[in-house]
Image (tube, rainbow, N blue to C red):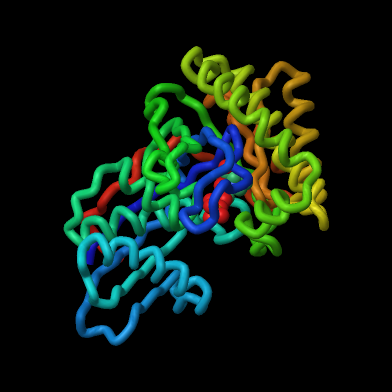
Length: 327
Ligand code: 2P0
């Protein structure tokens, strides 16, 4: 079996909306950071003796829907490698699945690396990012560590809708505290939520129109190590994404009351001159972006909030990689 590890990521400039659904091409570019502490490890082998694909996720047989999604993804690699055998996949996250912690990002990125090696394809990281995107848009970014930009691309075949690294994890000692406010699976996943937003929100065109300037400013903030700018842009993109999702019909509410309390607590910390900014994905968890020295005081404040169940602390993480040990 081949085993690969990919770290989850979350976006500072958010991806929300597609320009094409079959190849899963994004309607907006995004910029993310990859996280050290939250990841998926997947082991995979092609096995002619299997009658059908065997897929285990987090210690249980995959649901028919999950199995279908993974099998279709592995088909991309079977086609490239002219492989007809069924596949055995064992995949494990070290964090809650489907609760706004980008489990599909690390899952499909780890599967892409493992399938590439198991099928002897020797694909480049760019090609793996392109293929990972077809599993899940955010997975394209988890191929790389540190700061990563996902390009919208122009080509209809999707070959330029790929992630590219901006800077490695050593570039900047940034840190993230993730306040977990619920371990439940969200009711409306990102794929459906994006589709509803694009179809019904009157603000969707403006969301798309302001993306290029957000990306440009964020690239500058990273290159100049301007933490205040990076944080302000992250909050702006997060709130804009939630605003467009809230304005869908029916509106999408991914937050709970603890989510909102965390946002206020983070802004209050800023009033006390502690540089910390929030971002929130399609779920109720709040990610506090900060610098290493400020972790204890921010962690103490977030812990006080009713409804914050636990806090995950993470530095920036590395590229996805092949591991020697299997699951
Ligand atoms: C992001 N999210 O940029 C945004 C912000 C969630 C909120 O990328 O349909 O699960 O599989 O391409 O990758 C989550 O979207 O969506 C996501 P699909 P995906 O991180």
